[in-house]
Image (cartoon, rainbow, N blue to C red; front, side, top):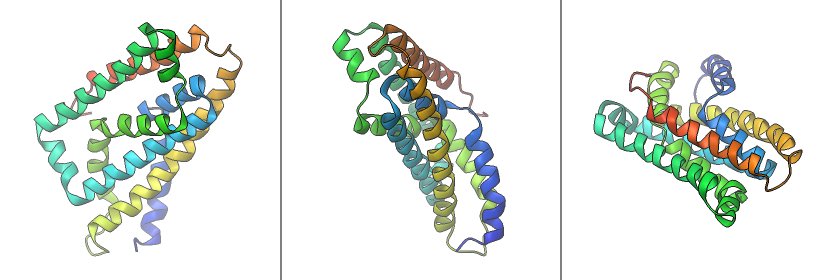
Length: 205
């Protein structure tokens, strides 16, 4: 197994990164506001699964391929932009039924959406490829195993922190009228902002 000293060095670094506001945290915040604590926790679980999948792919070497092939990076990036804009447009311009379906997500839909949002964020790929190898020991267990262990630690920390943010936000959302257009605009605005952030992402970021 990965040496304890390596994990002791990795855990605070991973927690510091998880505490840094980013796309995942903002998405869970939006879900907490509009869909409640259960959907926020489900979204956080989907995001954590996506992060764990990213680390597995990085351990297999596929992450490095995506990071060095411009076409692959762009396809993933624009797929994420399109998906986030699709959610935002449905909230901001759709009819009441569509807004309810997108804004007030079920637990299953929130989990699935969180997973897709994370998997279509190429910045996560770049981060994993650049960050995790610093804690991998060539003389230790298989590289894939080490990546999965580190990925599990990072995913667990992200799940707790992002889920907590979503639960906190749900308390604020509960104070606003259910079905209020304010919630639609706030959540749709978050989705649109995340899409813009992803669209402006530089490969060197």
